[in-house]
Length: 140
Image (cartoon, rainbow, N blue to C red; front, side, top):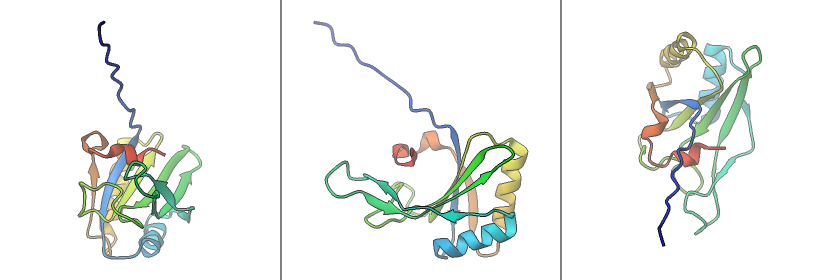
Protein backbone atom coordinates (compact mmCIF):
# COMPACT_ATOMS: atom_id res chain seq x y z
CA UNK A 1 0.00 0.00 0.00
CA UNK A 2 1.38 3.39 -0.90
CA UNK A 3 1.47 6.09 1.66
CA UNK A 4 0.24 9.56 0.71
CA UNK A 5 1.32 12.63 2.61
CA UNK A 6 -0.77 15.76 2.47
CA UNK A 7 1.11 19.00 2.81
CA UNK A 8 -0.54 22.34 3.29
CA UNK A 9 0.72 25.81 3.99
CA UNK A 10 -1.06 27.98 6.50
CA UNK A 11 -1.88 31.29 4.87
CA UNK A 12 -0.53 34.10 7.03
CA UNK A 13 -2.41 37.12 5.76
CA UNK A 14 -1.16 39.61 8.30
CA UNK A 15 1.76 41.89 9.08
CA UNK A 16 3.46 41.52 12.44
CA UNK A 17 5.42 44.11 14.40
CA UNK A 18 7.32 43.16 17.55
CA UNK A 19 7.27 45.77 20.33
CA UNK A 20 9.58 46.04 23.34
CA UNK A 21 8.54 48.21 26.26
CA UNK A 22 8.49 47.86 30.04
CA UNK A 23 4.95 49.31 30.28
CA UNK A 24 1.69 47.48 30.98
CA UNK A 25 -0.56 46.78 27.99
CA UNK A 26 -3.15 49.46 28.79
CA UNK A 27 -0.43 52.14 29.08
CA UNK A 28 1.13 51.20 25.75
CA UNK A 29 -2.29 51.29 24.08
CA UNK A 30 -2.91 54.71 25.61
CA UNK A 31 0.28 56.03 24.02
CA UNK A 32 -0.47 54.36 20.68
CA UNK A 33 -3.96 55.87 20.72
CA UNK A 34 -2.48 59.28 21.53
CA UNK A 35 0.43 59.32 19.05
CA UNK A 36 -1.17 57.42 16.14
CA UNK A 37 -4.76 58.66 16.58
CA UNK A 38 -5.98 55.10 17.04
CA UNK A 39 -8.81 53.97 19.28
CA UNK A 40 -7.72 50.60 20.65
CA UNK A 41 -10.39 48.91 22.76
CA UNK A 42 -9.79 46.04 25.18
CA UNK A 43 -11.25 42.73 23.99
CA UNK A 44 -11.89 39.56 26.00
CA UNK A 45 -8.56 37.83 26.60
CA UNK A 46 -7.29 35.64 23.77
CA UNK A 47 -7.32 31.97 24.86
CA UNK A 48 -4.57 29.94 23.17
CA UNK A 49 -3.88 26.26 23.77
CA UNK A 50 -0.09 26.66 23.88
CA UNK A 51 0.43 23.26 25.55
CA UNK A 52 -1.84 21.27 23.14
CA UNK A 53 -4.47 20.17 25.64
CA UNK A 54 -2.17 19.29 28.56
CA UNK A 55 -3.42 22.24 30.60
CA UNK A 56 -6.08 24.93 30.29
CA UNK A 57 -5.57 27.46 27.47
CA UNK A 58 -3.32 30.39 28.35
CA UNK A 59 -4.91 33.85 28.31
CA UNK A 60 -3.31 36.80 26.54
CA UNK A 61 -4.37 40.43 26.68
CA UNK A 62 -5.64 41.73 23.32
CA UNK A 63 -6.85 45.11 21.99
CA UNK A 64 -8.55 45.84 18.67
CA UNK A 65 -8.99 48.83 16.36
CA UNK A 66 -10.31 49.14 12.77
CA UNK A 67 -9.57 51.69 10.07
CA UNK A 68 -13.11 51.96 8.73
CA UNK A 69 -12.20 53.41 5.33
CA UNK A 70 -9.86 50.50 4.40
CA UNK A 71 -11.29 47.82 6.72
CA UNK A 72 -7.80 47.20 8.09
CA UNK A 73 -7.81 45.50 11.48
CA UNK A 74 -5.17 46.27 14.10
CA UNK A 75 -4.53 44.03 17.09
CA UNK A 76 -2.26 44.68 20.05
CA UNK A 77 -1.45 41.35 21.72
CA UNK A 78 0.63 40.59 24.81
CA UNK A 79 3.35 37.99 24.34
CA UNK A 80 3.35 37.15 28.04
CA UNK A 81 0.15 35.52 29.22
CA UNK A 82 -1.32 33.76 32.22
CA UNK A 83 0.67 30.53 31.77
CA UNK A 84 3.48 31.22 29.34
CA UNK A 85 4.49 32.95 26.14
CA UNK A 86 2.36 33.28 23.02
CA UNK A 87 5.49 32.96 20.86
CA UNK A 88 8.02 31.13 23.07
CA UNK A 89 10.94 31.53 20.67
CA UNK A 90 10.62 35.33 20.94
CA UNK A 91 11.09 35.76 24.71
CA UNK A 92 12.47 39.26 24.37
CA UNK A 93 9.29 40.58 22.71
CA UNK A 94 6.73 42.12 25.06
CA UNK A 95 3.87 42.74 22.60
CA UNK A 96 2.84 42.08 19.02
CA UNK A 97 1.14 44.65 16.81
CA UNK A 98 -0.76 42.66 14.19
CA UNK A 99 -2.25 44.21 11.05
CA UNK A 100 -4.83 42.15 9.17
CA UNK A 101 -6.28 42.86 5.74
CA UNK A 102 -4.60 45.26 3.39
CA UNK A 103 -2.13 47.96 4.36
CA UNK A 104 0.13 49.51 1.76
CA UNK A 105 3.87 49.83 2.33
CA UNK A 106 3.72 53.59 2.86
CA UNK A 107 1.12 53.30 5.63
CA UNK A 108 2.99 50.37 7.19
CA UNK A 109 6.28 52.25 7.26
CA UNK A 110 4.47 55.27 8.70
CA UNK A 111 2.94 53.15 11.50
CA UNK A 112 6.33 51.60 12.37
CA UNK A 113 7.99 55.00 12.32
CA UNK A 114 5.33 56.50 14.58
CA UNK A 115 5.56 53.56 17.00
CA UNK A 116 9.31 54.09 17.26
CA UNK A 117 8.76 57.79 18.01
CA UNK A 118 6.81 56.98 21.17
CA UNK A 119 9.38 57.55 23.95
CA UNK A 120 8.01 54.70 26.08
CA UNK A 121 8.53 52.12 23.31
CA UNK A 122 12.12 50.90 23.15
CA UNK A 123 11.76 49.25 19.73
CA UNK A 124 9.12 48.39 17.14
CA UNK A 125 10.34 46.09 14.37
CA UNK A 126 8.52 44.30 11.55
CA UNK A 127 9.01 40.55 11.67
CA UNK A 128 8.20 37.87 9.12
CA UNK A 129 5.40 35.59 10.44
CA UNK A 130 6.53 32.68 8.23
CA UNK A 131 9.83 32.50 10.11
CA UNK A 132 8.12 32.03 13.49
CA UNK A 133 8.01 28.38 14.56
CA UNK A 134 4.85 28.71 16.69
CA UNK A 135 2.98 30.95 14.23
CA UNK A 136 -0.22 28.90 14.67
CA UNK A 137 -0.68 30.68 18.01
CA UNK A 138 -1.31 33.89 16.06
CA UNK A 139 -4.22 32.48 14.07
CA UNK A 140 -7.56 33.59 15.51
